[in-house]
Length: 241
Image 1 (cartoon, rainbow, N blue to C red):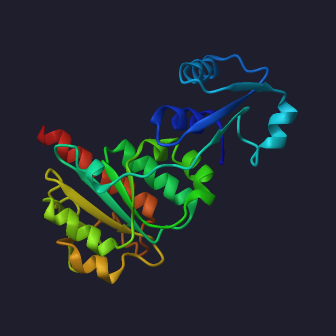
Image 2: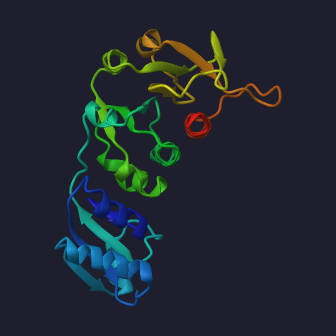
């Protein structure tokens, strides 16, 4: 596949979760960020080809590539064990989010908040990866991402490893301010249309909700909920330390 934009190209090259076979750079780019990408590519033996703006535009699908593209292989995904290497794992299971922009925004927030791993349903994400990488500002390349064939079974496995499981679900829930995120946790978050599956909800230990400042009934989308929950996890863990 071909990644577009310096943030995406840099993340793919530095994260090491996919091969980068060649980088294309517009021939008039000589700024510090471009020089960094070229030098790191040379260190890794990745060929760099200088091209005209017209040639770059012809190769790119979008128009906001900034003059830098990369040919890459498929992303490699992680096993659950990679998410548990932290002393206090913070893992998120995401169901029902199909839009690649929203998925990228979710990953960007969660990675910034210290999430140690993201679990997605096993499917072919390659068709949308260019969008996911860009909307996540490269975080998709750095995040431990696990693809699961059986989400409920994956929840049970994580519980066996000592993770307490919270579901973002208002029914029979407590405020997320009352939740204890200082321990190893798995947060299960669903998309705003379908939400979490009944099989996953059955395995969760406690439902939590995000309180609003007014009588607003509509649920936050997955990106908003992930940001609120993720940074509450970070806040609790930072203040406890």
